[in-house]
Image (tube, rainbow over all chains, first blue to last red; front, top):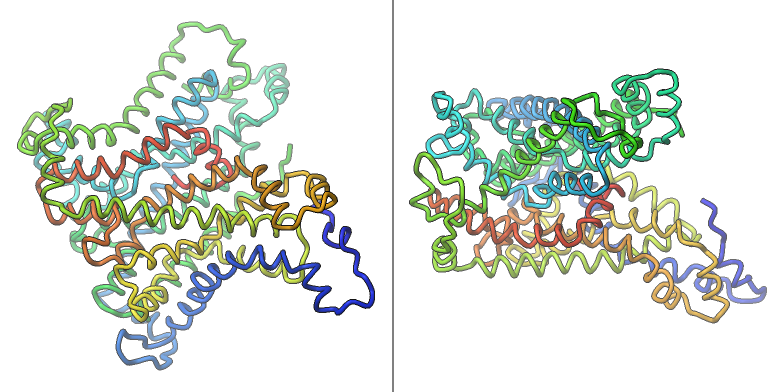
Length: 312
Length: 288
């Protein structure tokens, strides 16, 4: 940052003035400016985060309780309720793996496709892909639940056109999770398309011209120039979608309210149940911390693998 | 299709021939556009089709234009407009806070030096990776203890804590020339005056992205509002729509009439301010 210390420049410290007054004159407004945001942040994020760590080691219940229990909540989280949290971890990991991979490939693919188009068409397609993303996840989930309806749903209508038997998309425990994943994959990763296409648009043209002189074809150019040069965007998009997919909640909660056995439980639906149905605040906090550790670990690993030193 | 990859910058000079690769390119784009928009389309088709006609095979692919579902929605889900009003109040309450105070904080972090600046910024930065679910239990305990259940403040106040806007505004204000502030200072402008007359007007593009990001994020928020808004009159639209699904389980027409009205403001908003939405995504503001 090249910012100049203006405060000092325009208000040179005059000797002989009370140092407190001096401090206030120099910095007072800065503190006033950051105060409201910092206050909201401290009260509603910082303190709750620290408190959540503390609760995760306590026997905290709506009424009574409150002693230290060590790692009891963590072991309880994994072992009680017939180990459904372990099931939820597996489901979430599977959901994340499939949807993130699909989102990245679809995002890259569509961004590459719209790249050669005129600005007007690029804007049109970006908008068409983006439109569903401004709608609440609840409404998207309600709509997909209807599309998946066994008796009257549009997907089974399509299947009936080719003579296939209706599928119990969301009520068959063996495929309910796959159905939820399918709905995510079919929702175009709009932010990915926008970010990738912005990154692709900023790759210097002469790189491609040089490659053409060398006789490189379009695929070769895409693989050897486009992909390496947008790597930092790819990293960003991968991390973005990984975090979002590990926090998946509305989709499963709305589409499969019953959870059809445990087959569509995810980490966040488990946290929700620990608070609301079981009133186990300590366990819920422990589960949330586990979610945080998972996300942080994966993000660090992704940064390691996708880190790039290519600058242009 | 790969044949059209990376023609990016040379697109215009490439002769527009009717080749197989071009046909495949357009086919892929049209098919993905249909896949992308179809659920939205189906939502509105169902909303405008009488419920008895939504449960038949084959389904009608085009809406009938019947508003019977909406009439039933307003007579049976009596709190619907109350949900709508709650959503508006909550979203505006959070957005206005962020527009003013994120810009102030962003300005201080971008242009001013003061003891503790780096420390404060570091703390904010280090909490960015923490998933919001971590704060659920403590905030829920606070809401219980202060009897804030079913109060809109229970949703608005935690919404103020979102720090993303501080980053966005700091990044943007850093790019503004410092000479303008100095000129203001020399002309005897007070610090709040510099902010109000110089920084704020110059920050308009970033403010537009911030407003849109915040508005969409909290208009659509579900998890936290569903935990603290328990009684129907205090619901927001997403919480209300979710409750329609349990209350009117097979009245699809009614459920989608409710969904359509809830979705429409954001769709109109998007169509009007599309440019700022997409810029906001590029600034890293919007997940989607």
